[in-house]
Length: 139
Image (cartoon, rainbow, N blue to C red; front, top):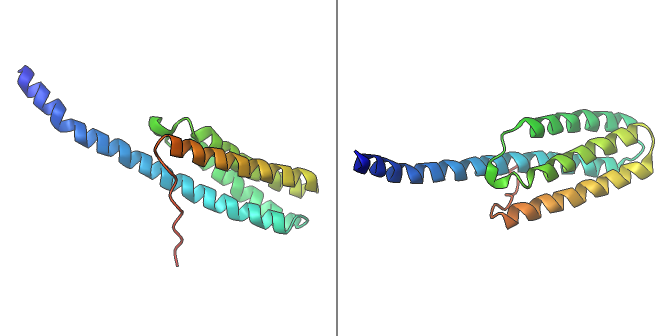
């Protein structure tokens, strides 16, 4: 009986390991997608600081990204990095809100904070052994 349990445990280990790695891969793909869109929005805000209609669109989309990131499953192996993803996305949303209110200095401050948090996020993932892939663009 013990031998059967041991064999079952040993044969299941590779499947569990693969599932864990695949789940981390899915998290990385989702994060890359969120960051790619957020970065494009940040660039648009920076280029058109006084365009309040653009800022409203960016704010709505940034809020949706933030909500998606806060609700997604995070593998334990990369949980240490996730708060930096959330802060990256939150700072773009805050920058858009500041742009709507005409506070250009705060727009730039939040965009710089977003960039710093993304750097920390990427660095933390790399230290954990899970570098972030480049987002794929459909052509």
